Length: 155
Length: 103
Image 1 (cartoon, helix red, strand yellow):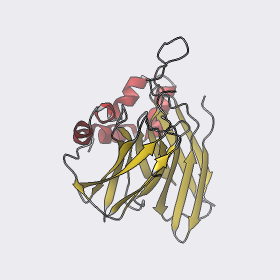
Image 2 (cartoon, rainbow over the protein chains, first blue to last red):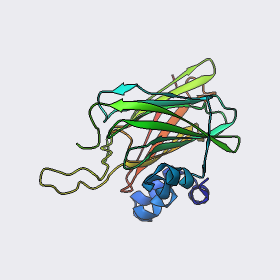
Image 3 (cartoon, each protein chain N blue to C red):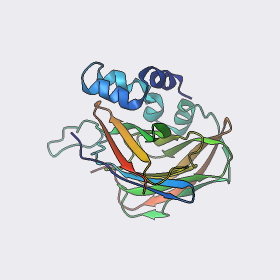
């Protein structure tokens, strides 16, 4: 995981606190950003993105399911949901193989939160969507291809 | 200041489902405007959801998340009248928190 983020959260008390500090100018936005996993979001290929979130080479698992359309007419808004049936799922990341920024979003799930998240992402072109899940300390993944007929990143 | 988030939190059979629609441009930093100049990146980077001060979800977003991001998740517990608060921070350091009661 991202130890720096843990420390920052502990030090700041909460994200809201950090934001408040940034808002009143006590700390600069760059400092508030320190917790964000920049390496992972800047990663240019799957291996780098996986390494940056600490996943290494995750095993494929049939216990993870991705809910996404087979064909997305509008790449600017592609609904993607990830459900993990693996016990002790603590982390879910959504990656889009052919986007300039592969890692779209990552979710840290405390105990008591269901391994079931949905969001919407942009897709520049037809690509595999990967769901990377950390459960009980190990990483797993699954993928699904989504065909895009109209790209969402070109504007 | 950014527009308010629309948050729905509904408790059913011991599980609370939260749906959040944020209002944010989520600019990737890759698009160009009509004169060919790059539009600077501006997107939500972090999000935290709390149920009565207990964190139930923390998320990191990249520029690949859609404009006006949508997020849905579920957590165990939660009763009618409990508070659910969602806070985001973007890459320019702007932040916003909105709170609703579980219905």
